[in-house]
Image 1 (spheres, rainbow, N blue to C red):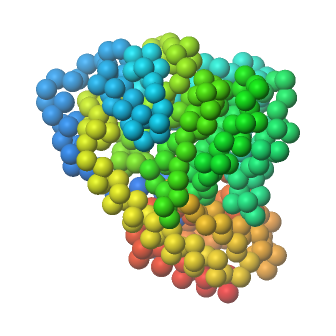
Image 2: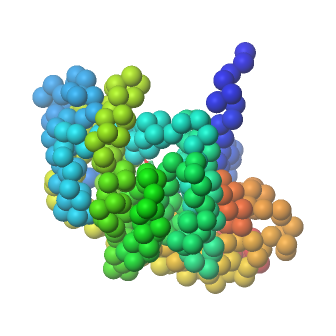
Length: 392
Ligand SMILES: Cc1ncc(COP(=O)(O)O)c(C=O)c1O
């Protein structure tokens, strides 16, 4: 049977591959410490669950109308973006509710990218960007961040990557895989580079509420009027409210783009489930104490894991400024271990030390690996003890 070229060209998620092998070893009775998780290790707060249950009991079991999302949720999204990000949107025409953040991004690539269009993606990047661009006929153009600049790219690098074929620029801060956060000044400086272009910016702000050390977050769309008119802002309940399994996300941006995304959504998923949307309404409009509790826990874990990783010979770990990942450069250990890169490093670590990490190659940087600290402090220490022995 011949599958489409599109599918044949698709790379399977490396995160899933590691999780799969770790699960197989666990089935054999081996105690694995996993740093692979891409989701918070907390349950969804009760008041959010209660709102969805009430909506379900009340009959919110039909298609959402319109399929781009129920109005109360679009209004709650508008409220969030206004309050926290200083951005103004019209609920009915400039907001779409999506099946997690991932569908939002996919719909936007699908609505904007034509065959051969280039999309600038800073590396390291979240694994799905290049694949979603490719699925829509686009060409990813990578711009490499350097470890000395916390893997962030500079305005000069961005400028150099622009060609007449550039359609979009993907901006993710705080980032997966490393919790790298662009300061407000850095956001403004990148936006200034694009000010004279028609390039559309995909600002993936999934981790905007998980920020450490009192650092400031700035939405890309808030950089200038031009940025606002050319940016789609993506977010979801997934990371902020620990709702990954719910699959409820949203995007806001220029009406013409949101309309295009909604059109594709009506012919594909018909949007996300109605009673779940009521859950996100409660999350966005309700008490935010739960967000702060989770953030504080991530903050202490971040400091701890960062300190311990940096104490290791051959490991250089930029400080995570947000999210729940660290992305240490481990290339200084490759020679001694006799490994060729991050894949072999991760395989050896899993098989010999029973610790699961994700190879940086999957994120476009083969010198590094990703560790998620969405796991208990006890597990973090147990895993780091094993890594320390493995590298000794
Ligand atoms: C940077 C980034 N964007 C988007 C997503 C997708 O989020 P969701 O689970 O809401 O689809 C993730 C999830 O891992 C992510 O890390």
